[in-house]
Image 1 (cartoon, helix red, strand yellow):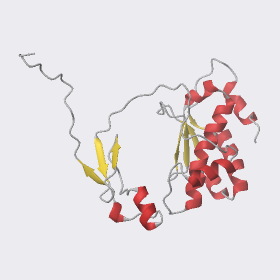
Image 2: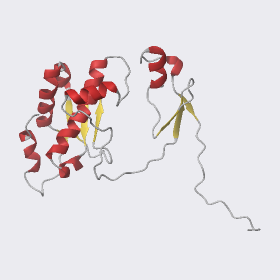
Image 3: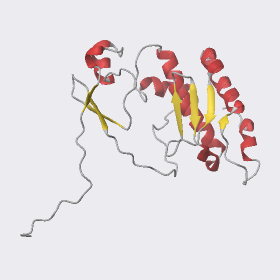
Image 4: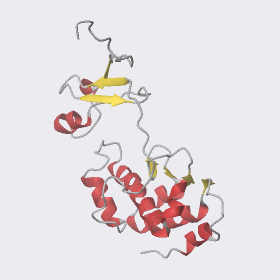
Length: 200
């Protein structure tokens, strides 16, 4: 386990502002975690940033940009929680790095193995931190043409996406256009109360 001395600067004063933007100390820490695992190239291009746009999520990983976003609210939870969240998100990037072009389950066997390699074996998929949860409507619905599984979304898909379960079952996890998600219309219920029958 790495020492937390890189994180001490974040807690110099209880009145200090929440961190924002890139964090070179955490990027260095991430590099030192990834290098012994054969992921030096990933560590070299990795960016770790604090993002106030995160609300209920403790962190987020983007394998396309090799970037980890952390919620500034983590600072109130202690250095250990920052360290664990960083490793949790790094595990997503490490799993994707190892898989190459092969599609994998975000919290599947590859991610669990990466968690173990990063020192957090048995990591849970979701955190239990007291962050506010904002319920967001999901007005966009996509359907797999094969298994008919529904995929509700808060935003429309920006690129072609396929049903992961069907791709894994029929094409070893590779993208297969036969299982490309199709957008469906969602009937939005009126928020108005239904008028009562005069006979009631």
